[in-house]
Image 1 (cartoon, helix red, strand yellow):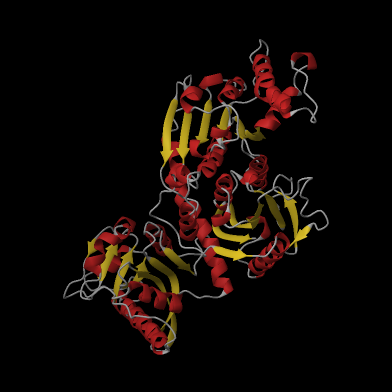
Image 2 (cartoon, one colour):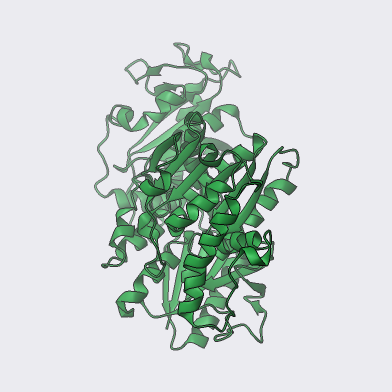
Length: 566
């Protein structure tokens, strides 16, 4: 997607025509830049313009928005003031834009080139396209469908002038004049980018309704494709239909995050939802089921100090077998109506019969399985095979998410650069031509782990002070669990960057003002607007078996990623 400079807010009091243009222009790819709402001078009178659109070739379009259709009268007459034509408005805007850029060009101090600039009018309620002509020196674009086709009209709209010799130098000038480098503007840009990331993902969410006649959806997608966002939406849709939904995941931190997420939905106006969503990890679910049955029905649990082989035999073989017998026994009452599973690839084949037995309709129940085989850790025992898991599901539909939705362009490119044998399958899953601009990835080096902590704390405090991100939108990741008995990095200090720091599995994780932290491996499935990796060797210095967990950790960031290595 294009780089956006936004002074309007789609949630605020916005002209209907401008909102239609905003939504249509979201389809532009990352070679475009768009400014929504800018200041210009009209005969020294300060005024406000609608959109500036900088094309990949360095040519610039000044776009005036009109809501009504009759602006397309042959005279170009404005639909509001009979004394002022829309043509006059857009030409005044063009003159003001050219003057502002020329003034900045005259100041020097930059590698700048003046763009060829043209004007056009967009009428939200019309449905026609009029190219400029000798009698009409500007283009008229009617309706969002035509505005979405801007790239194919671009040569015609900008005809009469040559593309820039150096489009990057034009972008530098455009950014200098309209980018606003203030902390407030950057914070707004980052906030609006998060909105746009979710808006783009909603295109995939519509598939849930389109495929609603299929009772089971099997959704495959690479890193950042929005599987978790879609799974959350799917669970919410099922609950709104009155179903009791079991939402399963594997990672404890993800389970805590999802629990918080659904709780926030309930306390912000969804108390009337007729169904309910219960979030459980496999471990939580197994413990809960153990509590339902008499001790003699299940094998004795070995003590936590037992040898690893004994513990693994219990959890991998004895317990699943006993639980399956218990939940399929005559008289067992299934507690759930529907099932949604995120990180489905982490759930062994032999667990799924237990899951299906917990549903009132068994294998005919509503369900959604979201998975990516490339993200299954090598250390997990057993196997996951979607064909075997789904062979008894009669109403299934397969869906593959092909576009990477969650990352801005700098994060996406950084992840692509972290390539080796362990990460190649993950990188193959990164596919996108419509990426949003965002802050560059920060790479810093510290002499030791303590200095790395201090450097990261200073960086975060700067982000928080500038309001680029809030603590609850931030995730700190360490090579090892900082709260473990062995490491205890915050044993004597419950604060970091002046914020209360908690484990990502804590009930307080995600609450306002709390800063989450966990290890690289335990972060899988999470995402955050800002992520900081602390105390890791540089990518170039990592052992091959450490690189997968580093990549997974870095891929948790949507927009802001920093690595403080040592």
